[in-house]
Length: 260
Image (cartoon, rainbow, N blue to C red; front, side):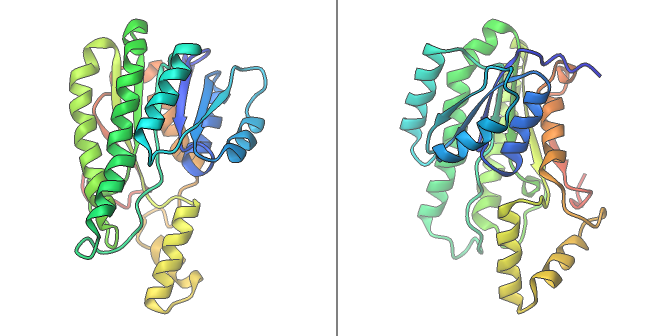
């Protein structure tokens, strides 16, 4: 299938590891010019070195805990270089813990990093998408928007807000050839999952191996996803072939989520 992505421009957030990195590489393989964005310049340079050299790839150093800095840097980049047809919003999740014991500041920090920064990027990039009559905004959030996850109280709360923001944005931007969709990863073999397993093992007094097996047994596929599998779904939603898919939450979770 020809995804018709050749020579499109994409901004991929959180692209130095995990799903973000896998997405950047997958889009590049389809001929997309990818700009990476994250806070660690050394890691950005390392990923950039892995990208196909015959494309116009680049990176932006920005910290999503500082939305004004993010806005300034992305606006400057767009004014001096080019706009983007594709935006992949992807930021590391808040720390775990029960919602009742969460400090108010945890909610504020997560809201800033996820919803406020997503909104800043959309407002900055949509004018170019409108002019091109082509836009793909894909938010990497969580299956918790369908089924809250135990021990991830702040994340459950903020992810739900992002999902509703996204659906509202999809309704407003669809007329301009712009789609807005959410990818809901399940348990994916990333550094964050490793930390979650370690915390579960410590809390229950079990081994890492037993905690891993217990988590895998909750998934019909009986395994964790690889980041590339989620990246493939994102790449399809970014393509011309997905032009009539708008405003959805797509779980990539091996069937773990029990709701439809």
